[in-house]
Amino acid sequence: MFEMATSRRLLVLFTAFFVSVTVAASFSATDSDGGSSSDGSSSSSDGAIGRLGIPVPGRRNTTGPMITDLNACGPSDLPAHALPPFDCCPPPSSVPPINFTFPDPSEPLRVRRRMHALSPELLANFTRAVALMKALNKSDPRSFYQQANIHCAYCTGAYRQAGHPELNIQVHNTWFFQPLHRAYLYYYERILGKLLGDPSFGLPFWNWDAPDGMPMPSAFADPGAVLFDPLRNPAHAPPRLLDMHFAGADAANRSAREQAELNLRTMYRQLVTNAARPSLFHGQPYRPGDKPNPGAGSLEIYPHNHVHYWCGDLRRKNFEDMGVYYSAGRDPILYPHHSNVDRMWEVWRALDPDRHVDFADPDWLDSSFLFYDEEARLVRVTVRDMLDISKLRYAYENVHLQWVNAKPPVTPGLRRQRRRRVLEAVRFPVTLNRRAVSAEVARPRVARSRLAKAVEEEVLVVDGIRFDGGEVVRFDVYINAPDEYHRVGLGGRELAGTYMSLKRVGHRGLNLKDGFETSMRLALNDLLEDLDADADETITVTMVPRQGKVHIGGLRIDYVLE
Figure 1: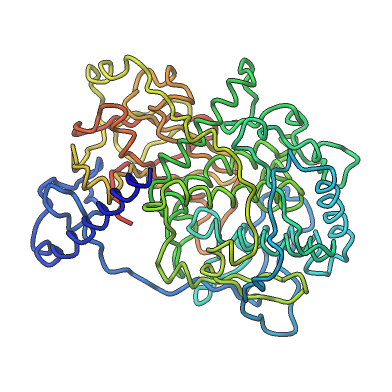
Figure 2: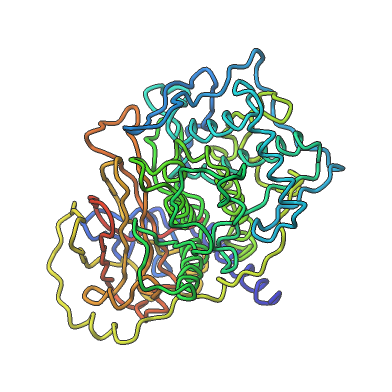
């Protein structure tokens, strides 16, 4: 294993060196492999080097970091029929925020453990800590009420962008998703520990990526317990397993074993196949002056979004509490859920240390957010502060990752069927409502070398995803299965990925009649090899609506070098 990792690292380093010494010559060269997308537009990989297909990194268009200002917090964009309270902004501070400092290295290490396997003593500590937080006065920034508002403010556009007051700050569907939620949990955990008088207190995680952790932890299902929230889907109490593809109705004929296997394959697809590069895992860059929602990372789309939806109360207009972002923090289960989301960041890094690295862009690293700490002091936290959990003095219990070996299988017989099909031309934009849409998408580079694949990922971009933010939408994307995608189902290799969004609301500075707009990216390197399609000049992309109506602006192939 060590020798293989070393060889791959040397390969990447050699290729990077090759790119650097040929940059000057490439400026006057044209891309011999073409570079047009399915809609005739130019590929974003300008400056490619001959047949290797290795794009030259261009100069970054930096505009500076995103900065949160407490004085720039105002009314949230809440959905219709929202439940009070409506003000999500944190309490004002009489003094300026202090800059974040790392905890003393001599502090006890806070170990975060599996929620469903907590000892009676640790479970009692967690329950008591939440009870103490709920007992605090609502005006206390450490109270359960105010902690829930933190999530509401950052996820519903309460903060305006510094220098662009017409635009808000939305951390979802951007590269801030992971670091913002990490900082949120960091202080939530320390506040609970302070209230307990236990500096070693660790926030447990809901281990939904393992079969024995897929049911909702039983401690949250007791109607008389402090962890219970009445605004949940009553049909999803334990022992029912989480459905990572939940679309508003439970699968009638799916056994617990089949559900667990499907979930494991979903984890593989999202943490291995579709998370090959930093922007694919974390999400797309989001800088001051940018419109919200440039594109979510693989883990955020699912299972993160599906866990929210699966927990929410479908009897409510907006599926409160967990089923919509503004109220999710009102349910105590949000925090173990996001503890596992945060754990996945560490797992992702360890799966492939050569490629699974964080951004080095200063616009990401120096962006900052505001939180109140365990002493009720206002603190400014940058993204770079949140990158090393050992310095933050917490760690995760080591758990076997069953999904690492759960690669979805290729569906037999689809390869020949695809070659016989002649597709009608598709004119974008198209609407997904009741019928699937299939389109041939040109691949600018085919049969790329192992060297090229080691440094760049071929990516299918689903662009201009637009829908009414007042409804939940979901659609699946299949590769090379235009007529028989139903045979593939949700567990086959031809399913490249799923887009799913919770109910959304309008955003300041945007035309609300145009609805919500974003994009999705799906990795193709390994997928096309598994489908024996790496030498094909085109791929067939089939988009299957599962819930809601959504407009698609176009499809194209990009090559990501990070």
